[in-house]
Image (cartoon, rainbow, N blue to C red):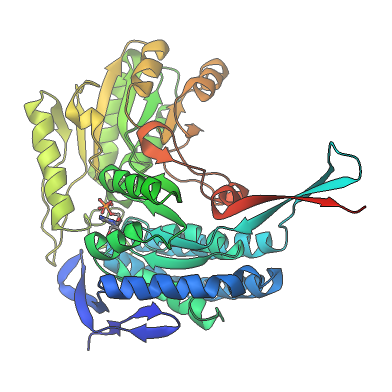
Length: 479
Ligand code: ADP
C-alpha cells in the first residue's frame, strides 16, 4: 500500500493525496503519495508561523538546543533507512544518499551547538554614561524554498539555522522529493517543536511558492533553485522589503595544468562532473586543460568513464544513478545535441541506457574541442555532461575560467604553489578548490558564490547567522 504524507500546518497533519513520487531508477515504483497544498493552506501556514514567532523567538537556547540535538540524533540513528529512501526518490547512489543524510545530522548538531554560543557586543557610547549593546534577534517568518538535488541536506542547512536563531518557518520543498522533506519535518515535529514553528507545505512552486513570495507576512526567504525562479524571488522580495538569499546555478571550471598529477586531475574531474549524476550546482562542467597534458587527460578520462557503473541507485555497485526525471533527461539530451551542432566533439557517452527496470539512465557525456563561447559552456545543463576546453597556458586558463555569468565554485589541479596561490586569489568564485573536486564542501564553513550564482549572505557555518538574524543596537543611559 502506498503511504500518504500530509502537510504540517500549525501542528496538524492535513491534506488529501495530490501528487505521486516516482523512483527515477524504476518508474514502476511509486515511493508515496503526498498532499499538495493550495494558496489557502499556504496562507494558513504563514499565519501559524507568524503566531508562533513571539513564543519561539523568546524560547531561549536550551529549548532550541534540545530540538536540534534530538533531530540530529534521530537522523543519524536512521541514516541507512533515510539515505535509502532519498536515493530511491532522487536517484543518487545509496552511498551518496546515506552520506547526504549523515551531513544533515551533522548540520543539526552544529546548529544545536550554535544556540548555546549566540553572543553580542557591548561598547561604551561616545556619550559619557551611555552603554551600547549590539544583539541579534530572529528575523520572523522565514520562507524556505528548496530544489530536488539535495533533498535532505539543503532543507537541513536552511531549517537548522532558522530555528537555532529563533525564527519560525514555512517550508516548501521541491515537488520531486517530498519524502525526504516530510521525513525531516516529521522528526523535528516529534522532537518537540511547538505548533506553528515549522510548517510544511508540499505543492507546486507556481502555487505554494508563489503564495509565499506574495505574502507580506513572510519576513525572509531563503531559496535554492534556478536562476529564473531566483529572479522572481528577488523581485517579489524587494516589493515586500523583505530579506532574501538566493543560491542558483553554476558553470564551474576545473583547470588542469600541465604540471598536474594526472591521477588526481582525473579523480577530481570524474567526481566533480559526474557524481550525483552531475546534478549538483557545484559540478565542474567546464574542464579547462592546458595543451601539454590535454591528450593524456582526455584519454585517461575516457578510460575512467568507461569503467563507471551506471544503474539503479539502490544497487550497491552503482556509481552513477539515473537522471532525476524525464524533463531533466530531455534537457540533458537537448544540450548534447546542441553541443554537437555547435561543433564540439562528443568524445564519450551521451546515449540513453537500458537497464532491468525502466528509468532515466544516461551514459556520462564528455565533449572535447569545446570553446568557452558555446552554449554548452555558458548555460547550466545540470546533468552528467562536461566539456573539455583546450587552452595554451595558465593565464588563458584563468581568463576562460572567469569568463562566465556564474561564480559558485572553481578548481585547479596543479603541483605549482605559485599557480595554486594565484588561482585562489584571482578566481571569481565563492569557493575555490586546489587538487580537489569543485563539488563536495564542509558543513561548518560558508557556502555561496558570486555573479549569477548567489545573492545575499552566505549559507552554512557561523556565517548563516547573517541571514537568519537581524542586528539590534540598544543604548542605555544609567544616570
Ligand atoms: P529546479 O530547476 O531546480 O527545479 P526551480 O527554480 O524550478 O529549479 O525550483 C526550485 C524550487 O522553487 C522548487 O521548490 C520549486 O517548486 C520552487 N518554485 C518554482 N516556481 C516558483 C515560484 N513561482 N515561486 C516560488 N517558488 C517556486
